[in-house]
Amino acid sequence: DAHPPVLNYEIKFMNDHSHLPADEKGLLSVHIILYIFMLCFGFYSGKLFFDQYQKQGQLHLVTILFFSAYILQLGSVFCEALHLYTYSNDGIGLRWKNTYWAFDQFSSILQTLSELIISLLLICVACGWTLIQSLNSSENGGSYSQYDDNDSDHNKSSKKSFINSLILSLKQPKYFFSKIGPATFFIPIVSFLTLYLEIWGHKYDDDFNQFHDFEHLPGFLLILLRIVLCCLFLIGIHFSLSSTPHVVLVDFLKRFRIAGVTWFASFPCLVVLTVLFPPYTRHQLITGASLILQTLALTVLSHEFFTNSEYFKISSLSQISSVVSPVLGNIKKSKVAVD
Image 1 (spheres, rainbow, N blue to C red):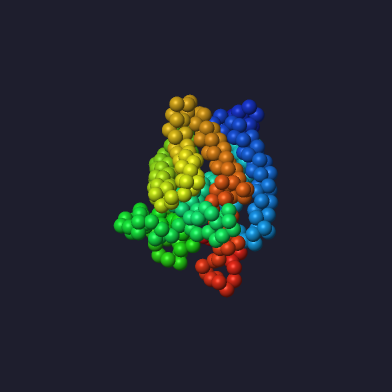
Image 2: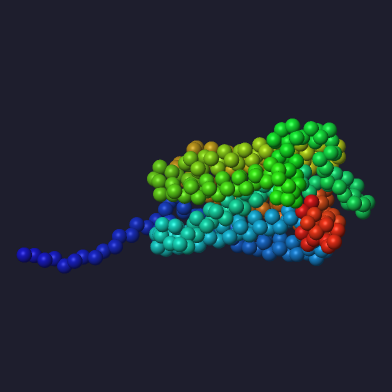
């Protein structure tokens, strides 16, 4: 009887000396380049952030939220780069099914949170948050005032519908949880839905008939949710435009409307346009474009929040030293301005 020896062997399928599949080719380089850029620009923005605090003695909630979104996006890029580097070497990567250090999933969640903060930030500003009513204040050294619920006849009738009440609630974040209103429920619900759909979508990671992260039901619902937020942004802009007689503010809101719609609509349009490209390139296009769009948005917002920009001049950021926290009242000036 022949007893051939046991033959142990291992087969490796490589793609240009890497385990990364064709649909992720080049993404590691994109993540490394973006991470280096964001890290350098983050130090620059951090310096502006600190200088603003030293000069005015306060920070504004809008800048804190922006910086939180920036750090989350920076963490997302780092986690995904680490996953792709590991995958290129062992063909396994860092996913839930292989390790508790699921940096691939962590990256998606961090980017989703960053995009969610930016989306809600844009909507609140569109509804009138931080926009000052008297443009003469910053020029003459006087006190500023923000939109008030009784500023116009349009706002006096605002409680006639849920949407109107939601818009008025979103323009005053300081009352989100101190007063029960539409925004008290809207923001937690939107946040929960966004995270739930993102986590649900990872169940389809290994489906061979899915060529990118939005080619399934939870991905489609995430796109739909983004379109709904875009509509809410436009409604907020409409309310703000109809509530102010100031030409400078009107001009800003019209340009802000174009920028905001571009931010909200660009990604859904990109997902639709990917059907024109070969299936194996869709994941690269979706991932790369979403990273670049988010990085570009954060860069533009950093300029608006920390420099002497048009938004800075017509917003309460230029007068935050006169803003007092509603919690502390007149006893002690808060280190964080929310109006």
